[in-house]
Structure formats: C-alpha cells, structure tokens
Amino acid sequence: MNNQPYLQDLRVFCVVVRRSSFVAAAEALGASPAYVTKRVQSLEERLGVKLLHRSTRRIAITEAGERVYQRAQSILDEVDHMMEEVSVAKHAPRGLIRINSSLGFGRLHVAPALARLAERYPDLEIRFDVSDRLVDLTGEGIDLDIRIGNEIAPHLIARRLASNRRILCASPAYLERRGTPRHLGDLAGHDCLVIKERDHPFGVWRLSGPEGETPLRVTGRLASNHGEIVHRWALDGHGIMLRSLWDVRTALADRKLVQVLSGHSQPADIWAVYPSRLTASAKLRVCVEFLEQHFLRGELPS
Image (cartoon, rainbow, N blue to C red):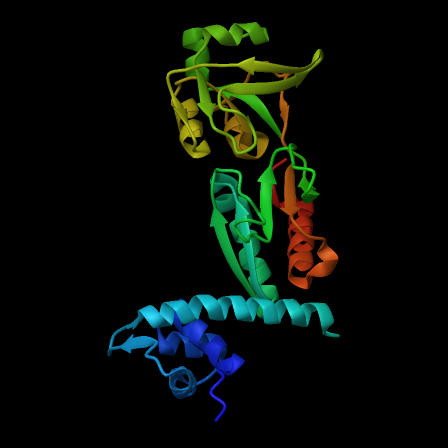
C-alpha cells in the first residue's frame, strides 16, 4: 500500500495551520470545509499520526503536526521553485516569498505595496518581517530585503528602487533654545539623537558635503535602535537627528522640523537586495519589478 502523502494534502494542511481554522482555510482555498477536513484526515491516516486537536471553537497543532508542518513547508517551497524553473507558465508567480525591511519604512511604505502585490497575484504567498538589524539573507532564508543605505555587500545583488538621503534636522523649539549649528564641528556642543541604523556603526554620522565625506562621532543623552522613537524625540525638542527624507518630509513642510547644515547629508537610497538573480525566480522578479514601479509612480515622498 502506498502511504506517501499527497502534495495537495500537505498544501491543505499548511493552510489550515496558518489560518487556525478549517472554515478559514476552506475560504482561502475556495473549497468546502468538508473537502478540507477530508484532506487533513487523509494525511493523518497516511502518516499514522494525529496532526491537529479539534474542538468546536479552535484547532491546536500537535507536536507531530508541528514537525510535519515545518517539513511540508520546505517540500512545497522546493516544488514551487522547481515549477518556476521548468514550467512554461514561468511568468505566473506562485508560492511563498520571504521579504524583510526596516521597521518604519517597512510599515509605512513596503507593507501597503505588498498588499497590492498580493491582490494582483493570488497564487503568491508573502511573508513579510520587519527588523532594524542587518539580516543574513542566505542564512535566514530571506528572498528579498528592502534596504535603506548604499553600503551593500558585494556578494549580494541589488536594484535601486528610489533615491533617498538622510539629513540633519531639529525642532524650532530646540534650535531657539540651543542655537543653530553653522559648521559640522558645532554638533559637538549639541544633543544629537543617536539611532543604530542597520548599515552604519552606532554614534558615527558619515556626512557628504563640499569637502567630501566626513565621518563624525556624535553623542547625546538619548539614543535608540528605533527610528520612530528618535523622530518623536526630535519633534519634542530633545535634539538634532539624522533621518531619511522619506521620514521627515511632512514635518519639514509643516515646519515642525527644520533642516540644519543643509550642505551636508548622507546618501541612503532605497534598494531591493537579493541573493540570486531575478531570472532564477519568477516570484522574486515580479516582486522587485512591482516595487520598482510602485516607487516610480511617486508612492514615496521625494
């Protein structure tokens, strides 16, 4: 007797686990709850283990089910990748793509774009994580990183999605209280709001100006690894910050923030960074090209 699980049973089981509901899984698959239940029961019978605990209100995955789910995800990813490489329908992306970006930019700009991408390609499953640390794409199994900053490792492939730079700015109240810096050296006498950027050492601002690039070590009483926190501190008059134009454009226009030392800035373009060439994956190619067009249409403040 052949007791090897069917791929479709594995797919249905994975959707049930992700949705935590047979009914929700049925809706996602465009099938009936009875069909979903039958496929999961068939998988359990073939494997000879209980995968899910069922009740009238919820389901819970068993220890064996968790192991099967992890392996099934890997198997289905490999099958989807194989289909992309050999199928004549290569231009119709399908399967799971893992995407990462920074907290603030990811939440405000990447997440809405990915929602539109999912609407356009219903067979594409997007897993989006945000983090203000530099991720290891290959080691962490990430297909695409939407990254701000022009320092990209040579073994990675990158496509610029939009131009951007970081500028120095502070609130009018802070500048009235502490004075406006006229030269880079003046920053030593100011409260600088330090943030740990993903691609720069902590407490060092590399600023480009008429004299070229100048690395400047800055200090202040307030520091964070979260850009939105630093932005709030600057608005509240606690110091001078170095932040991307996309993040401060509105506050500058509303005069809630004022740019200082306007002759100096830090290049920090927005990039799609990935470990393999776009021709190797339809889902990666479609995603990168979609984001590129998204930002070209003016979806990002410039």
